[in-house]
View (cartoon, one colour):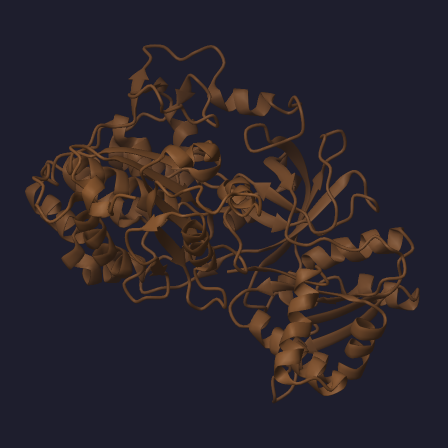
Length: 602
């Protein structure tokens, strides 16, 4: 096989960038790679992993894989098919012997399986005969300067490997790259406006999906935390009768939120856009499809309200393009500084640490914002991504209803205005008591599956809103006559955030549930679910080892999963009389056989 430098001496290597992205960061980094390749006059394609015909990899000379790690070491949704294929045992060991590759990972070192997907993919590509240009890059969200602190030097080394020791003349960084689309504005508004088109899709063909969500009527939107509790948590119920939705315990509902009307007005004002003007979208290149979520023709109001994520925190590429588009010398200088490798710390202080939004940045650079060509809006601002919530009710028990438990995200930084979660704040603002409310949603399988056998006990650990999927599971299991249900629930105070207290008490009376509670703030020494688990170690071991129980965990991903796993390890060692290594092997076996499952979120 030729060495990488030998192949890189070709006039124009064919470079392929494939990404697996859950929140858009990996896609953003991939598009940056594409831009940097084009500045170096390299031919480059950028694609999502699941949209690429993976069997063609054997013909690719040079591939950069950019992949995030989600949850507890899982691949993102848009690379799961690729993941299954690449780990087939039947693949020959020399399948990729003609391919040079590099892997760039994006993760968070506060999680136990930091960059697990990138590390595992790197090893697998080596097993299949691929030649690594560089060690795997481990981008870390927890680094003070974010993942770019690792990515920048790694990319510098990558281009040296790809292009060889001879410097290549670069296209100047201040020149904007061509926009992906042109917006062709219409002289007259069409008869059916885009907002009506969205409402018209109440009866989609086929099962509801991201491209054809069901517009579900919201029935109730009720705060379920006490008035003095620090957080507003909502129990929201939708009418799904006749919707075509089918869901089971452990599934998640995805909701497509909208921007607030005040933000839409402010955005249009600072950019000088007319909200009611209509346009058609035209791709600039033949292989770039128009976003399927946008109707054609579309109004500016529809684009801004339903598609552009104007309240997200901008990435460095945003400042890079904004600098290219700026006609104002002083603003352009500052934007170039933010987008440079040397401006890392200043960008972090200005934007990343205080969670300043795209809209707020545009207001800080008014001369630049007012000069942005509309053609660049979709290059500059990422799309609004759907948010996932655990289904908190059983279709078996309540066929026409779907419930979710939503913690409304709001927190303070050094900025005057509090930071607010887009989807949770939008949902909280909807009031079905004031008139009909419809929410675009669809359902997909989650990370939890529950046993169908009637005599298998289930132990569920769900502090806070982590209890939501277990409420669906308990309702479903009780409806099937499965009564061996043990729930460990934790919250701050019994009178403030004890979700579904009356329901649990009634199920206890019926002999369908064993409830164990931990109220952390009701005594001087804080008590959490892991403490209750340890207290009931003999029962937990009896259920796991003698009765074949399944163990589930859901909730905040920061510390709780590790604390509960440690408690479970202690129980296995103390009650089972196993050594540390044997207890770890026992726990790994539970995970491998899906008798220990967890679903966590940041």
